[in-house]
Amino acid sequence: MELANLKDPSEVVTFSQAVKQGLGRNQGLFFPTSLPKLDNIDALLEMPFQQRSAYILNQLIGDELGEETVAEMVNNAFQFTAPLAHVKDNIYSLELYHGPTLAFKDFGARFMAQCLAQVSGDSPVTILTATSGDTGAAVAHAFHGLSQIQVVILYPKGMVSPLQEKQFATLGDNIHTVEIDGAFDDCQALVKDAFDDQQIKDELHLNSANSINIARLMAQVCYYFEAIAQLPKDKQKDAVISVPSGNFGNLAAAMIAQAMGLPIKRFVASTNANDTVPRYLLNGLWEPKKTVSTMSNAMDISSPNNWPRIEAMMEQGIVDKSLLTAESVDEDYTHIGVRQLNELGYLSEPHAAVAYKALKRSLNDDEVGIFLGTAHPAKFKETVENILGTPVALPKALAEVANKDILSDSLSADFATLKSYLFTTLKTS
Image 1 (cartoon, one colour):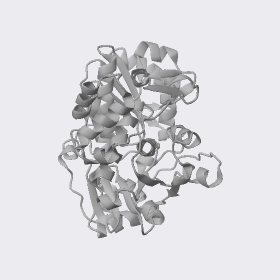
Image 2: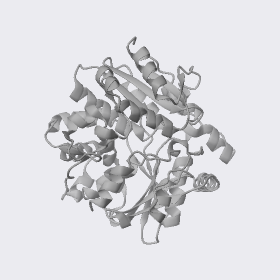
Image 3: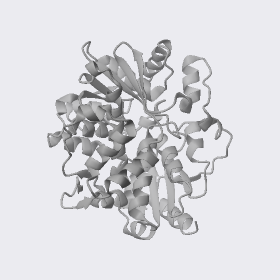
Image 4: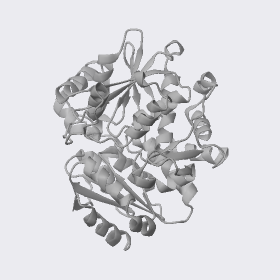
């Protein structure tokens, strides 16, 4: 598998190199120079999830790691399901929150951990990542206790839910968590600046577990095949996928799945009030505004990091740009979405509610809609309880961390301060 830097196409790397580097020169994202076209889709959709996923990832990665190794990595990473729940009539929810940290990020983070263990061996690695909520927990749990890997997680102060914070900021050991006085975009900018600093890259062996890392993105491709596989056969060619979108890695993965041959009819990019992409698709102007806080906090991102990958796929004709629409759902309609789903007997949370409302605006009578449930409702316990007026029970994974102490440090959104922190903290770990 060859991947090119989207900002500097002369930089071409292998999958292993891309996993180890994270970002290319000039903060460029790596993307495959070509995507395999699968001609056995019907047979693939009949396979069990893990077997199918191993096949898909082997086709993407090529013979670099070996079929048996990739299959073992998939079996180690994907030890949970992604069920498709029938919500009403022609609308379904793909539930991606049945992993250990109850969020879709478990798929990508756990597979990336397997990849990094394969390609890094005994070499020390520093994972630096930013989170708007669920990435932090998934990455922290995927890498917790790995002796050669130090993890630093940056998150915006006061902008993740209390239970999200408890999941990643209470572990300690090789997991270092830092609340940044700023928005997620500030955290993400600090990560990018660190990758531009040669001293940090060389001395701390820097890597990232954000969806900028290609391993995470590849893993996410697999559950779109699982979604279509669970639809009735007569509906599999009419599926519209509504993706709650913040950093846009999830949508990029859906587009890769379609490019490989998965029958996805079209896509809906569902955002909250941070509506850079809906406005861009409407008027052609890329104008990120100041990030605003919403109840769907994992999507509170104004400068989505994965958009260049989507743009590249559309510009190169890999994906038909006419098949992408975008909808912005405000706070009032998010409230309504949570309530409407509850009235249908389906307990959900704000991110899925955004995707549900956007899907309903767009869906035609002859189509079947799938919206992504990216996190367990209990991760947003206070918000959901305030909307519905009824208690939300905590699953075991959340109940176990609810009373633990936060172990985070606090820093300003200043790169020099972060650099000093990294060397001080990691050199003594």
